[in-house]
Image (tube, rainbow, N blue to C red):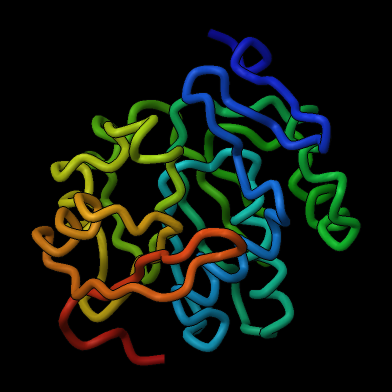
Length: 225
């Protein structure tokens, strides 16, 4: 299935996955959602430090990466932000541009991202790596460990494989001690799987109409800034 075959668009211009029957981001305001859930949920930008590494399940439109990159540049840290994302079906650059055109503040970053797809991309103040394929196969082989995780697969009800206990255990295995995750989902089986993987898990107010989201950290001493 090609990326174009997997996409529909609603009247507001939000892309929808035909495979998972779910939007790629909140119809209310995807950028505000990214900031509330993934940045605030991981204590960012306050936790940023040189060499900070974010990992993500589900690159999608790249919206979360662009929000983090913008926050990193605004924070003014030396060196690049490292960002690694695991994506089963990379979106075509033209569809990415269409999906994100509603946020003019992203335009300079989207232009710098250009047609970047799977692989490693040195973008100056950020180094983006998109690892294509099923995360259940690619994440166990990844040699890195993240300071923060963005868990942004499609809804657990529609894409249960992305929220399986074995995969979330790999997330924990690839997290530095004392470091964090955040996700829009507060489903009980997701929280239990993250807790079983070793995270201390809590809930907070979700974005928009979502009553709750969850976040947490792996016990241990975080890296020193």
